[in-house]
Image (cartoon, rainbow, N blue to C red; front, side, top):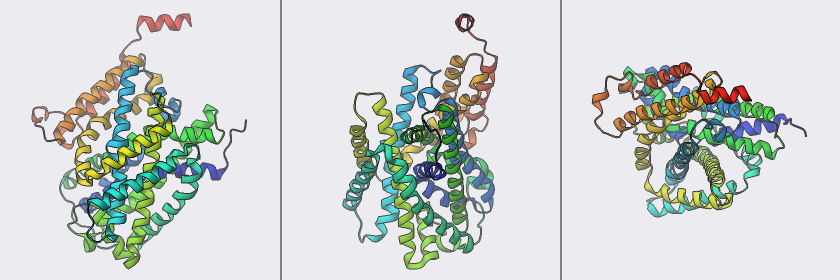
Length: 437
């Protein structure tokens, strides 16, 4: 069987992955971070790019090297623990936070500006329509490359390039002085802001979607799958970096049109209208609707695919269940949804990072099963401390932890745990199995 893809199909797979990633958080967080970073733009943006581009790229590569699935990545963890971790991540990127956020941002930025006296009825109606369309696309799982990679994403990319050219040619203000934590810890603050995109979580699941899409194109050989999965990851990462750099610069140069704005959506809207005049909102609405819709399709499809694999309920039934739940949760409101998601992100993001790190060093570990259990547990325990801190609990007794003040108290203990695992010997059982093999 032919295990080679045409160049157009390789680009389409990369575009599909890029479109899955580029959603609500990717659009609303960088402009606000850029405005607050001001003249500390470069270190803040570097930190953000590490977590919002570098980690998803590394995660997709880890999935490819591990064998192309969540089960391969977590084979050294107890099965129930691996399933629980996956379910929690899917709930976060699915019906609980990330997917409903796509609908909310699409409404707030692309539809609400055209409605006079917009109210709850309009949000509810839009949520139903938006997620019905997303479910319709997700329904045809095997055709995602053709529908998203070859149709929706090119239109989205044209809109993004138009915006980026305007931002760099006609900046709407001078760089302001850095504010808040961006004044003292711009790199670390940018790193933590990258959590909000949820893309490291999403990449754990989108990698599996890409594998399924490749299979629909006849790619079944493991070496070919790994090669094309990594190629798609680099294409998606390049696209994301392009978008983030332009949006950070947009925020940093927004002083003349959006000084004092309290969120990235407001900054982006004011900037685009200043650049493109009366047509600005149409440009913005096109970009936001397509970005949010493609991500919603990817999230609903990924969640449905996984829940199908651990239950007797078929994929299409899960599409309806997950999509309907997203439409309901979307009516909570954007600010409430973001505030609820932050502590959860602080608790689980370090666990995802630890899992990816272990994937790359697994072949060097004397006792992978022990290593995975210990490192994941250490990362979770210390991440819970950071999560409790951002949730408002008093954890000052642990302030002596390195990087505690910048919300990264998990990093050093997790790194030390990984190093220690190189010195844990094999069990007698393992040695016996290897000798008799």
